[in-house]
Length: 134
Image 1 (tube, one colour):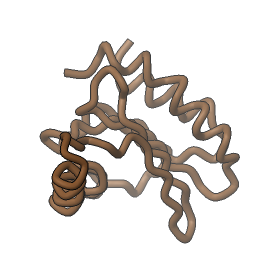
Image 2 (cartoon, rainbow, N blue to C red):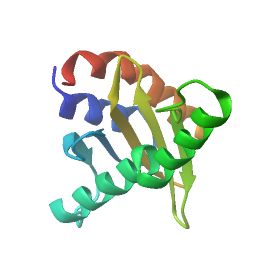
Image 3 (cartoon, one colour):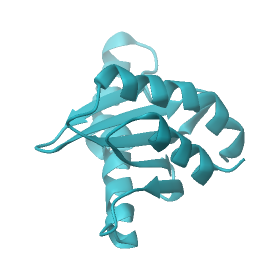
């Protein structure tokens, strides 16, 4: 099995799913992707991956974690594990792969999707993705 196949399986599990990808949070590269949207270009997908990196490992996030470290007296880093984002037309489910904290799974659906079903599909796939990530 490969990451692209797992992304395809996640899409098959969630009615209204539009795309699924795994992003390397260190490099910003897409490790795997599968989508049902014919107009998505590689440059668009790369830009979305870069935006996801900013949300989890961006300069502002790192600054806040450093402040927390100073206040608490112990290191606070890589604290964000999951994010759900809603846009005008879509839901985005983003989760760190627990065994590979530099890998992020992203599922995008339209707004007809059931939120619980989206999270269930994401969380169910995380153990299968971990062995395939660097």
